[in-house]
Length: 254
Ligand SMILES: Nc1ncnc2c1ncn2[C@@H]1O[C@H](COP(=O)(O)OP(=O)(O)OP(=O)(O)O)[C@@H](O)[C@H]1O
View 1 (tube, rainbow, N blue to C red):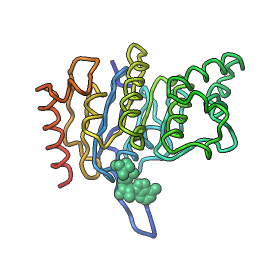
View 2 (view 1 turned 135 degrees about the vertical axis):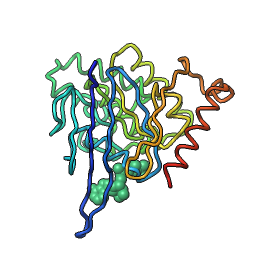
View 3 (view 1 turned 120 degrees about the vertical axis):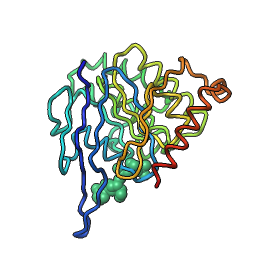
View 4 (view 1 turned 90 degrees about the vertical axis):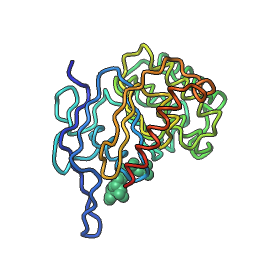
């Protein structure tokens, strides 16, 4: 089966003050339908650039990006993108931010409200429906962003360190929730993280990037699910994979 996402010979150079900054060089990546790919790499290796290209928000300098074999040139409704920056609408409260993608799809008001209420519970924001983004903590805003993305029911999810700013317990809860929603959904996920353990707990494949997006390691993760963090930390296969990824990250920094 052809991949949902395909990147070929992709290079991206930014220009800042007349100087060129190469973010990606000759980058190739295929993502299979229904897969959960964790993209792991140090700060500045080009992870967000990869997602921005996949989302159709920026054009490549050279090379090609395809969504279901069609060149990507602009954002698509089938693709949800949870960016690192806050893109909530400040004039809309939590509920109305989450309803936004459903409004675009012309979902009837009652259905919208019910679905928003369900998602608000799922991300642990019950009681904050009428709050505006400025009245929420950074972690709460991230969760509204997550719920808003899920409200659009996209077939492909691009997520840029969605849980980075959250405390450990909340992070673990939302990781579980995301997996619960993903499993059996047929959705394809590309999940960017700095965190080795997170990459391993979530992904059925981990791609480790080095400088300029060099793929240092591309590893299938066939650990059984559900992956309980406490059990995994003492599982010999998990520990061995963790070590491989640690080595790959180190190698990528060179
Ligand atoms: N709009 C831009 N203008 C100029 N340079 C940019 C721009 N966006 C990214 N870069 C540069 O491209 C490189 C890759 O950035 P990118 O944001 O993709 O890294 P990242 O791996 O996502 O980092 P982090 O984990 O810190 O978010 C960096 O050197 C960055 O400075």
